Length: 144
Image 1: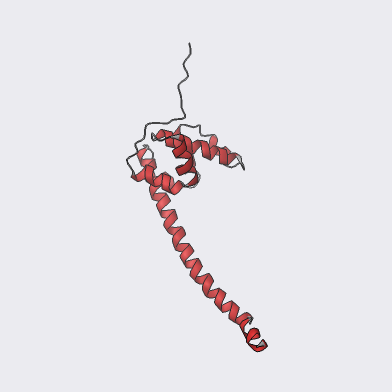
Image 2: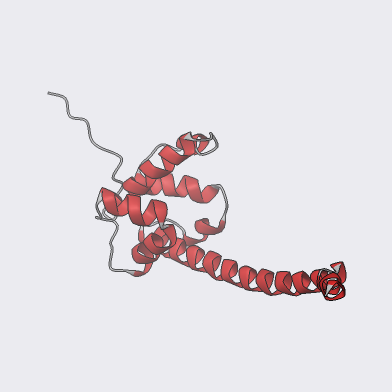
């Protein structure tokens, strides 16, 4: 019995099993990640196009945030706030709400679908019937 246990716990046997498992999971994980990224790029591309911005801006890493800030009507210097830890969460939440309002959706819709489940939110905005209403963050100040 002890010989059977010593064979079973052999490092060679364990290494082969884990190597195969790692190969299978990394291939599946890579494929799922690739599908996720392609869906996000396509949906952001369509959302940017609906808002009158160039669709290719969705694939340029920092520039896409700048264009997103233009779409929602926030100033360009807000891009710096995305690089500050914990502040970027609040700014991302505000931009998600503004983006939802820019497409005629509610603030709760922006929080749930654009902030937490962003792939679903961008798919709905990009390929759904949502139309761009204009930047929601710019409000006119009237003087009396």
